[in-house]
Image 1 (cartoon, rainbow, N blue to C red):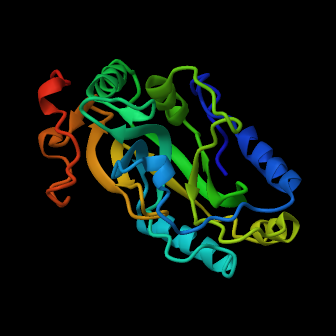
Image 2 (image 1 turned 30 degrees about the vertical axis):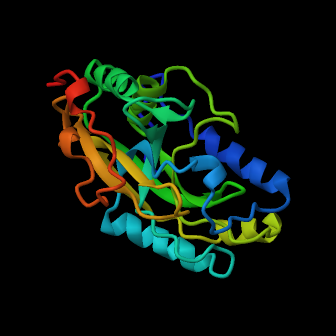
Length: 259
């Protein structure tokens, strides 16, 4: 593994978060069982959930994810179809007129784009490799070698802390399909390949997924170019493949130019 550049931003995510995740997983004793159902009590009929993420759907990363899923065959929920990505910030359910605490409206999107536009963060590198786990899902480590993840996350979220522990950048491999003992799984995780992939991050993506489909695929709504610090994407025509009766909100008229 490359050594972290000492000049990296003080906002860089420390490697110690992976040790904390491992210790927490071991202490839990058993995994959490994921189930395939609608979760209406969460989405309340709202069709899509949005998030900011780094798209790492690359052949080398897909291979690492596939190999890890094969190593954990028999304990993962079937039909996980989400592309490799690094979640930076959860947004909420897109809505032109937010009414629920977890709705995501034009004002918050504009605030985030403004913060990203003022950020002095160009393209940067991350290192993906090494297998670990949360109680709900196994994942590939993502090392913030240049500090770019920490800077982007601070722009999107500020000093907000995570309720379940420190923010841990990762690529989810799948979801556990049962309550399995963690001790033998730790052995399977540790027996994995130490191969790592270096990725250059040039943009971050605003993505969404169908709220009723656990582990369903992501759709990219648009991208923020880090080199030019501007939004790229037709906000006025979000998700053209969506069914007419369930479109995502049109934010275009309520956003100022971010060029």
